[in-house]
Every structure is written in structure tokens, then in C-alpha cells.
Image (cartoon, rainbow, N blue to C red):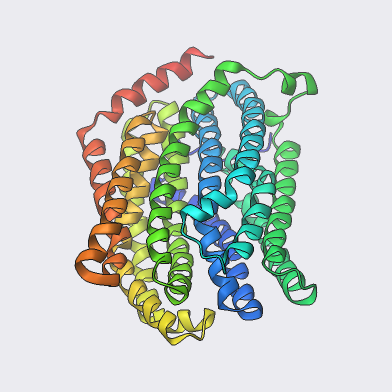
Amino acid sequence: MKRQQTTDMTHGPVFRQMAVFALPVLLGMLCQRIYNFADVYIVGKFLGDQALAAVSISGSAMYMMTSVMMGVTTGVSVVVSQFYGAGQNERIKETFAAGVHVSVWVTVIITAVGAATARPLLELLQTGEDLMPQALEYLLIIYLGSGATMLYNFASAVMRALGNSVVPLIFLIISSVLNVVLDVAFVSWIPMGVGGAAFATVLSQLISGVLCLLYAVKHLPMLRRTGTELRKPDIRLAGEILRYGLPTGLQMSIISISDMTLQAVINTYGTAMIVAYGVCMKVEGLGFQIADAIGSSMGTFAGQNAGAGNLARVKKGVNSAYLLNLISYGIFCPAVYFLAGPIMKAFTDTPESIRYGTEYMRIFTIFFLAGGVLVVYHNILRASGDVAVTVLMGVSEVITRIGCAFLLPALFGYRGLWYVSPLTWVCAAGVGAVRYYSGRWKNKAIRLAADCREQQ
């Protein structure tokens, strides 16, 4: 195996390793975000505000699907990084094979359940009859193409767990460019409506996933398995993947439920508010790519060092993650605050939507650092084996978001909606901080390192 294809993060300068790892992850996530921005921009420009509102509503429903997938692939990533830190190459091979089986079955379930419940879900979101046909069309195509989403997330998760964040970026850049071209082709040149935007996204993700997986198998011998080995996965390792993946998926899913509750409240304010909120969610999602990239770096770093039993180095990683968040949001938040108006005008010409969106962006940017720290706690606790508390953090987010979604508008009008997510980030980050600084996660990490050594 060529060593440059992987990175051992159990030695070397901590801040530099985490920054170098996080940058390609961030660029990759930004490319993935281009999928969504391209859909929103092209749909809004060629099909109008009604189609844009339909796609925005579908985005909230889509997060339920992607959260489960991200949970499963995170489970694969955590187990692989732990074995890599412990030097267990054969167990990495077996984890890869088990992860393939788990991913396939989860994809089948998501596709079936998603297609069957798409309309009821949109109805729960109080989607108007004028928006329902387009929202349903977009959502069904995304659900039926969920295998493409899972494929890329699985392949890139394995590569990143081994310390390689560059290769997934390269293939995602190629796919992002293709996605923009296909968006224009299927929405403008070939008038397929909002379904064309969804189909372009699925096809682009499929291409990036296939390329990333082929590269990983070709250049990393530790991932190669025979047909017989793939047909007979290690049940214990599949269980380990689910032990990390299901709580993560559950935590993300219950957060998505609270997000959909907020979306349902937003939908009662009319199309102008829906459009504004939809665009703001894209910008907020863009900002969270920074947190997720740093969190991904934290997860890989903590997983490898927890597997190696080096807890002092894990704590240094957390401090480096704090600093990375401070630097990143020190640039991003002021930029969004002052450019909020022009950002809204790029997506819609409706004055009311522009006013709503500008107000919201200037509020959530003030609280973004809390969201970044929240993601750090999720990743350090999960990678160290302290999974249950991350679910508790998710529950705290649900309670705060749902409660505030109904209480704050009643007290302060529509402007109360703008403080729902920021207050949620602060409360959940507080739960994570209490757990981390209590030091109880170290006991889980010590047992995890012992388990890795026993499997030699």
C-alpha cells in the first residue's frame, strides 16, 4: 500500500494535521452544496418562485433521508478509523465488507419507506396544494435515487477514516461541474421542470460515488475483498457499525423532525416567507459545511487516537478544532452579515422575500460559532465511544427547536422564528460541553482502545 494514500494522525503536529485534513473536506462539502444551490438558483430563475418554494420544502424532507445515510456511513468511518489507529489492517478489510452490506440494506429500506411516505410527509409540512405536485415530484426522484447518495457517502467516509480527504474532493468537483451542466440541460434546454433538477442531482452523485469507490479499491489493497468474503460479512462488525451509526442517524433524524416542524410553521406564512427561509437554509447549510469539515477532521483524528489509546492527543485535537472554528467563522459570519441583501437578490426578485431573508441571515450569523462547537462535541464524543450522549444532545435540540418554534412567534411575531435555530445550537452545545469537560468520555475511550488491541 502506498502510504501517501492514507494519513496516520496518531503522530505529528496536531493543528496542522487537522487543518490540512479539514480543508479538502470543506471544499468537497462546498461542492456538494453546489448541487443544492444549483437546483435552487436554476429552478428559481427558469421556473419561478412557486417552483423554488416547492424545492425548498422538499429540502427539509430530504434531510430525513440523508441523516440516516450519514449516520450509517459515520458508523463505518468511526470503526475504520479506530482500527487504523490500532494498526489492525485486516479488521479494516472486514469492516469495509460489513459496511457494504449494511449500506445496501439501509438504502433499500430508505428508498421503499421514502417513496411510500413522501406525500404524507409533505402534507405534515403543511405543503399547499399549489406546491404539492412539484414538491412531490422532486422528492420522489431524490428518494428513488438514494442509492447514489449512499454510494458516495460510503466511499468518501472510508477514505476519510484512513486520513485521505483529497481523493473524495477531486471526484466531487468533477461531479459538481457535471451537476450544474445537467441542471441547465434538464430544466432549461429539455423542459423537465423540477424533476429535471432532481434527476441531475442524482446522476451527478452516482458518478462521483462510482469514481470514488473504484479509486479506493484500486489504490488501497486493505479494502479489497473477494466475492466470497463480501457475501459473508462479519456480523459482529456489522453490529459495531450499527452501534455507532444508528444512534448517529437517530440523533440526526430527530433533529430533522424538529427542522420539519419549524418548516411547517414557516409554511403558514406564505410563499414569500417560504422562499426567504429556503434561501437562508442554503446559506446556513453552507456555513455548517465549515463546522462539518472541522468535525470530520475531529472525528477521524479522535477515532485514530482513541484506537491507539492516546487520549492526551485527543484533547489537543479538540483545542485545535476550537481554534479552527474561531478562525473560519471570524471570516464567514461578517461576510454573510454584510452581503445578506445581495445574496437574497441573487435568488429572488420579490422584495418581501429579500427583506425576510436579510433579517434572518443577520441574526443567525451572530450565533454560528456555537453551532461549530456543537459539531466538535458530537464528533469527539462519538469517535471516543461515548455515543449515547450524542443522542441526548439531539433530543435537547428537538425539545428546544420545537418549543421555540411555537413559543417565540407567539411572543415576538414572525421575527421570533429567526432565533429558533440559534437558541437550539447554544443549548445543545451546552449539553456537549458538560459531558466533555466532565471527563467521563475518557472511560469509554479507554475501553475502546482495549477492545481494539484484543482483536489483533
